[in-house]
Length: 381
Picture: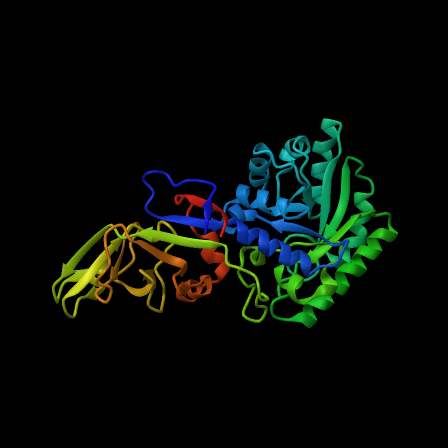
């Protein structure tokens, strides 16, 4: 049985159910993949990949996570204002003018290059306090961060910035779910750069590199801390790095039947009249569409689950409405729950199934679920 720790607004017709028990269980499984003293920083950026950042933060910290990783300052401040006291690393760019706010709220910012570090130093000096920071090195990702070959020169400049407190250093892997040899070479380059920085005075207490795929497949990359994201939510990083047995999907996406009607043969459905009934058809209307994240797809037909059976989508998905054919489900009634993503009885629609429809990834599916839908938090399932 599932026990709810929140309630749906009276007018909710489309919603997400988040199994916090599954999050805690997945976190414990991730902890079991590492050896002490390696710690876990759980990545809860983008509203915890669409699952709800605050509830997720509370669950993972209760289950043994050491720190949280977020994308931007706003995400970090929301957690602090809600009473989350754990270490928080802001992974993406924060304007230097926001440094005093970061210091006030005990946040750790990322230093990407010398110019940004000098700007942060200037703002921190004005407060009379030091800014906690971690250094990001680019070992092959090709995005933000100082190139590993430039790391020694970067350290020489950091050494003179006394209002900064660089506590750690990290890198990120672009192919840990595909090319393990390349990823191992990245790790080697990263560690060599860190060693060169330490010879020039760097005093990093924490090194980290492992995302979900590396946490699962490359134990040599675990270092002092791992940064699982997608795996926490019970979703595989890729087909080549599947989740081990025991991990559970966390999210179920539900809506309900709001109208039933019989269409005569020849009657069309939806914009563009893209679907026409070839024979008499029992149709149900669902109050969900691309405005919720149930996107139109470039290929493959869509299905939903109703009364444990598969019902095909008919016609174009619109912003707030979707039509399904329930001719083979005569027991369907207005008010019936419909599952768009997740399990209903013995049937299941996975994030990977939707990703294939959208020509996308499971990451994009869950992070693209609109904030207009309430998240119903379930404590145990």
